[in-house]
Length: 442
Image 1: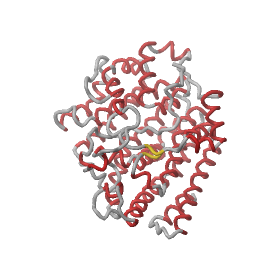
Image 2: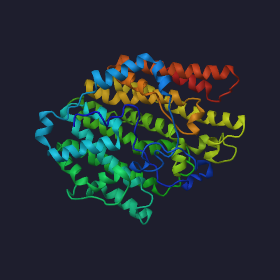
Image 3: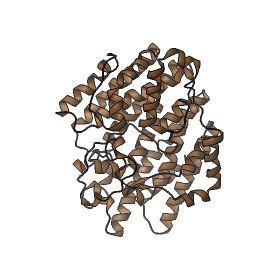
């Protein structure tokens, strides 16, 4: 359980909601037939692995020697430690169930596995199980073919906290794909660990699970083929699937005694932390979500720029005007996400425990780096944009305190400003220019 073989230091995994249809409500046509398959798509739901991934070549990576050194340091010299073998954990939980939870966590979200394992023993399993429970719930929401009707899915979602978290034998067979399906089919092992958690932690997990399920149920009947209706609905969805996660984590930090009780009351800041990660992934995953037929870019934003009135307009531009329109839309959404940064930094400044700080801060710095990579980048419309592996390793190594995180945020905000200014000098009249500059100067 101490191996790092399954740890992913690059991707930011959200509680993402893709369906598993090619096309679907997204009206994706033949242009996607040749989409590159990346990895084993059978291991994930939806369009994961079915669209091209934009990443820099090995040669370009080697040019950045500081990042190469960071990668060597993180992977071989000073890897993120794992506290799973601590006496506190081994004496509290069944070894086989513990091993399963660790293994399945690595399979469904390698990036979160790395930061969860380094948490203090008194908090580690609480957060690990919290993540797996919500991942199981998310798998049910994602499956677009398993249920006979939306009503059946809604019933399962809304009763999940009373079934999966109460009945030690509860499991669901045949729902989801790959590792997510296995998580549901072997859920009693997760329940065993959940039942051994402190009552305060179980109360938090159950409450957030119930509220998230209620939010997911609200969106089951909505046609998201062309995205959310407006920014308000976009924010509401992000709140349910990510903002509530932020609240739950804050409460777990507090009940563990590692953070001040007052952190549990920071509902707005906790929500913004989740929204920042969720919006970053929604922006980056434009094509995957569109191909799935379940997209989240708000229509009130993208319809200002789409001449065809279709969200897929940006994926296949035929004129310079169409290309620019896509970038205008993209930059407005990136700016919307960047405006959450002050609240995220304020939240991080309230954390006292070093391991909790790193757990929270590492995904945040990955997000700001990803937003900078996406800004004014047409590759977003033809695949999934990813930051260099070496850069992600360097970010992890440098994320140790508030001062370092402020430096990282400032670095990438400055890069966004330079990109915006360079584009403007070349004649690119971005409607969001002033708003972008303001967001980056906070």
